[in-house]
Length: 214
Image (tube, rainbow, N blue to C red; front, side):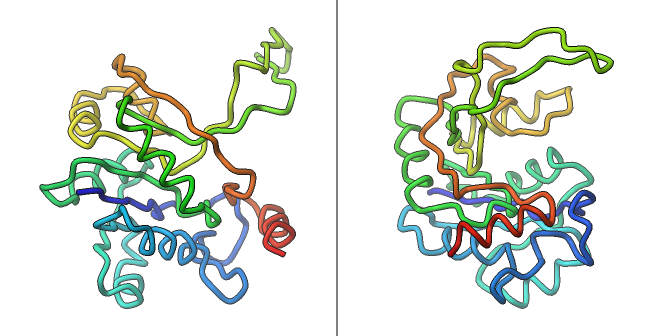
């Protein structure tokens, strides 16, 4: 069984809107609806869990009565773990996706799941096109070779039991699920991401999404 978890419990402090970005409208649809629809229509996904803040629990349950909607935690890490704990006991593989990435494609999901045949964790990724700088106290300390750096996207895909075991042993705070496995020595890889799979963080990103969607 394959479960897709969509994380939507954040308060979007950088978005500067009247509601969190995942519940804002784009082309008369909530941002979260785009990824939910993609997951629902993917032939490999058997169960969908949406993790939201307490304020949005009842409204989202009403909109999506056939989806398991859960209340998340104070951090992304807590919300991921609560989503994992809510998975069906038959779950073998799990995808964790940011609701703010509205334009995730079925192809990305398929590539991630296919790569799990040989790896414990998978993330879609794009090569970094910008020069990177390591900075301390506004001083450039190093400019690493960008050829070895990639921008990771979601959904990230995992062997369910391995991810749960890693989360249960985790002592550090993380902002990315695949880093949990990497910290504990598991074998993870990347698959081809897509430029359209941007993460909406600010109002400017909404404007960018409009140009991509046209």
